[in-house]
Structure formats: structure tokens, C-alpha cells
Image 1: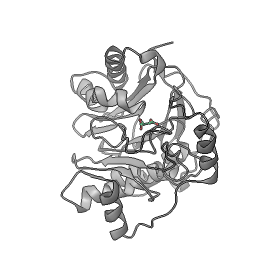
Image 2: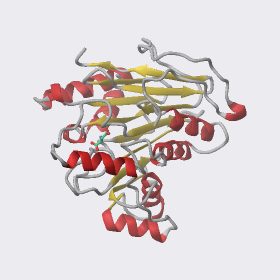
Image 3: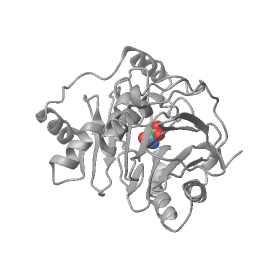
Image 4: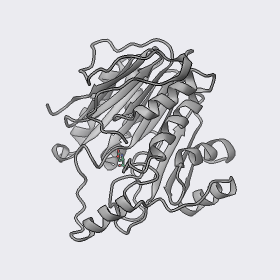
Length: 322
Ligand code: ASP
């Protein structure tokens, strides 16, 4: 993935796009309301937003858009927290978690999936082709292979080298903010205000074998309610799971809070429930049907990226600790 500290460059969305000049990460505007199709992703996932906007502006569904977006970092070997090239568990296995949810409230999820580069597409398969919501491990792999997904080694040389260096001390200490957490959660809204979302990750680096975080859990890493809004999360999955983080954000929006306020309230809940909050990071982003968006996190450093037909903006999230 490209450096999140970079300035936003121009967006290439084909003929439907308007190209904006470079702009710097900025503080959130007090009123974050946008018209038309919108894609919003955790971190500086600009390639994901471009793919989602391309889908949204070329007649694809909002579900297609979030899947297309999530597949970008999944396929990028330089993104060390998602898909191919993701950091392995402590035993050297890349194990992937992903989920997807559409405007009708259908959802699908895979956990502890190995050897498949695009877990978000397997999650969509679970949603569309099985009577279940979640498949795990060997069963998820079996479904993927039966549907033409190629099994491949996802541990790149770079990730392997890092893991080998880590093994010298074998200390499990998730980095608060930056390099350990590039999970992508992506939310999109089409022209009619319909919402979908997806979330995909290789999880916490050097986790215990079999550990599953928040990202594939509906209501924790992702939640969509087309009557209200959608939210997704990044950061320490265990802390997000404890408060059903994204379900909480959406319920706050249902009670009338803006996406920005809803994310803040959910972060405050995480803080309240985790006495060690000063040593962990959690960030939420959210969008509502009206096209209003927001984000909030515990520690400074989390960013999210918002795209419309007229361009893209990288936004520094407000934080509980300033
Ligand atoms: N939430 C993810 C997990 O705990 C990690 C991340 O956001 O990068 O697995």
C-alpha cells in the first residue's frame, strides 16, 4: 500500500471522474455531507477508493463497489496487513479474515482462511451461494476451491524475512497505530443512497494460530443497516469485539447522532471498557444514507479516505487522546 502520509494525488476514475489537484490531509469539516456516490475507507487506501468509485460510476452495484475496493489491498504484496503479503501468525502462516454486507442486510464472512488471495470474494460467495453467514478455515478453503479460486502461497519473501526477525525475540506487541494496522474497511453509498461495506485483513501480526479478530465479525468489524448507515473498524480487534463496535456506531446513528458523533461515542465506549486504552488503537469510520460521514479513534494517527465523483480527500481522524 502506498505511504499513508503521502498527499492525495489525482484520482483516475476514467471518463466519469473529475480530476482534482493535490491536497493535504486535513481536519474534518464540521459538516461532512456529500452528494452522489461515495466511497470511504480506513487508512490511505486510495487505490481501493478508486476501484470502488469506478464501479459506482460505471453501472455496478454498491456491493460490487466495496468488493472491488477491498480486493485492491488484498492483491498488493506491499500491504502487510491484508491478503497477499500480509504478516503471518507466530508460526509463519498467513491467515485471513474478511466479511461483506449489502443493502438488504445479507452478509457473508470467512475466518482463518489460508491460501486464497481474495478472502472478501470468498465472503461474498458464502453470502450468495450458501445458507450460512460464516465459514472458517478448511471449510472456507474448500468452498473457495470448489468455486474456482486458486490456492497459493501468500507469504511473500519480505513478510517472511520480517517474521524470521521477529522470531528471534518472539514478543507479541501490536504496534499502536501505524505499521501493524492497515486493515481495510470500506463503505460505499450509491446514487440512490443504498449502502454496502466490506472489511478484510490478515489480522494482528504474529497472533496466535487460530486467532480471529473483529474484521470478519458482522457487528464488530463491519455493520450495514440500509435504513440508517454503515460503519467499519480498524485497530485492536479484541477491543472492538468487546463492544460490538460497528453495530454500536450504527445504533448511535439510528438514535439521531451524526456519523462523526456516533464514531466518537463508540470510541468512548471502547475506552470505558478497556482500562489499558492508552496502549491500544481503535478507529471507526461511518456513513449515513444522507451522505454524511465521519470517523474517530483513540490515538492520534488514524486516517481515512473519502472519495466522490469530484475527488478524494485524506482525513486525519479526530482522536480521544490528543
Ligand atoms: N482489526 C484487525 C484485527 O484485529 C487489525 C487491523 O485493523 O489491522 O485483526
